[in-house]
Each structure stands twice: as structure tokens, then as C-alpha cells.
Length: 203
Ligand SMILES: Nc1ncnc2c1ncn2[C@@H]1O[C@H](COP(=O)(O)OP(=O)(O)OP(=O)(O)O)[C@@H](O)[C@H]1O
Ligand SMILES: O=C(O)c1ccc[n+]([C@@H]2O[C@H](COP(=O)([O-])O)[C@@H](O)[C@H]2O)c1
Image 1 (cartoon, rainbow, N blue to C red):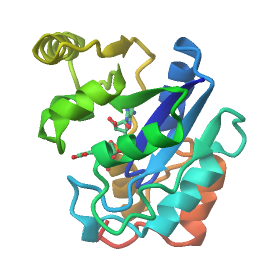
Image 2 (image 1 turned 180 degrees about the vertical axis):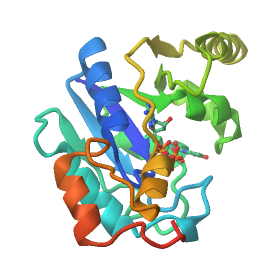
Image 3 (image 1 turned 180 degrees about the horizontal axis):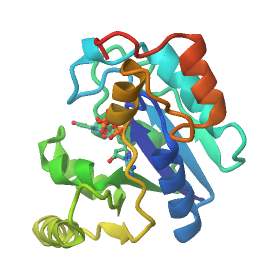
């Protein structure tokens, strides 16, 4: 099987994540995609990220109507920071006979060399990159070429329709009492309102 791995803080998960994942699933003919909410995001101030239980619940609500989408608790259950290299090593043990492909946006690509054991990680698993409007396409292609050459790897790139939604924008809009309808799935929209998420300036 070909399995996509979609990791993220998902604070909250939004349509950008879902559309990106669905295009990549189709474009690469993946058998499934495993969504992995980070427990303790390595590069974000953990005290500023909403409780993992809420992020997990919103991820579940977002993917439940897609038979190709699954959720893994692998990082949520870990007591230390969610380093991707640890996750990939565990998953490769679990899915010995399958091909794993890590899905990332361009912002993640640009910082990937600062990730834990990045040289090893880049060799351990294939990567597919999706663009974000905030980045110039040429910069993305240039960075992919540089990383490919430096690490003797082949990072894939998929040109997908750009949907510049970010979790940051969603949290800002909630705090300003602006609408987030259509930026997240309807059930997540309700979940955020019902649980009064992101009202405080903490997240
Ligand atoms: N609209 C989008 N288009 C393409 N990739 C995206 C988009 N939003 C997020 N991603 C990618 O999804 C992964 C997880 O993203 P994350 O959960 O940090 O969301 P985010 O919207 O970037 O959050 P924040 O605004 O809080 O930083 C990252 O690799 C990121 O690059
Ligand atoms: O392993 C690392 O050092 C590392 C550093 C930063 C981010 N990541 C992973 O990259 C994915 C997207 O991260 P983020 O912070 O944009 O939500 C998510 O799966 C993180 O665990 C991983």
C-alpha cells in the first residue's frame, strides 16, 4: 500500500489541510492518508497551543466522512516533543510492507533542515510538498532542487490549487468575533463555537 502521512499541529484543522490531502491522495494514487496531530509541537510554544484533546476531536470530525482518511494517536500519546524522525521510525516498523510518503506544505519545507535529525529523516521517507500562496513557486522549486542535490533524494512536488487558509488566521478571526464558516468543516465550526475555543488571546 502507498500511505500518505499528514502531520500537523491542527490548531485547528482547516479546509486547506483537507483539500491538500485529498488532491495528494488522488494525484499520487495513495491507498490512504494517516493524519497525525502533534502532541507537543517541536517548533511551537506548547503553552500557546490548545489542548491536544480538542485538536484530536476536530481532526476526527474533519476526516470521518472520507474513507481514505485515518487518524493516528502516535504523537498524542508520547510524553515528549513530537519529532517526526521518531514518528517515522515507529511507523516504518508498523507498516513494514508499505510505502510511506510524508506530506508537507512549503513553510515546513523551508524549515525542514532545522528538524531533528533532518538528514536522516529526509533519507528515511519520501516527501511530497504542496505550495502555499505565501511562497513564490520558484522559491519552492529551487529549495526542492537544493535539498535533492544535497541529500541525494527526490522530494516530490504537486501543483495543486492554492487555498491560503491558515490556523493562525482562523484563531485571529475567532478572537475578533469574525466568521470562520467555510474555513473549517461545518462540524468543526460548531465544535469551536460550542467549546468556546480560541476566544482568549492564549492560543
Ligand atoms: N492552506 C494550506 N495549503 C497547503 N499546506 C498547508 C496549508 N495549511 C497548512 N498546510 C501544511 O499542513 C501542515 C500542518 O500545518 P499546521 O497544522 O501548522 O497548519 P497552519 O495553518 O500552518 O497553522 P499555523 O497558522 O498555526 O502555523 C504543514 O506542513 C503546513 O505547511
Ligand atoms: O521533527 C521535527 O523536528 C519537527 C519540527 C517542526 C515540525 N515538525 C512536524 O511538521 C509537521 C507540521 O508542523 P507544524 O508545526 O507546521 O504544525 C508536524 O507533523 C510536526 O510534528 C517536525
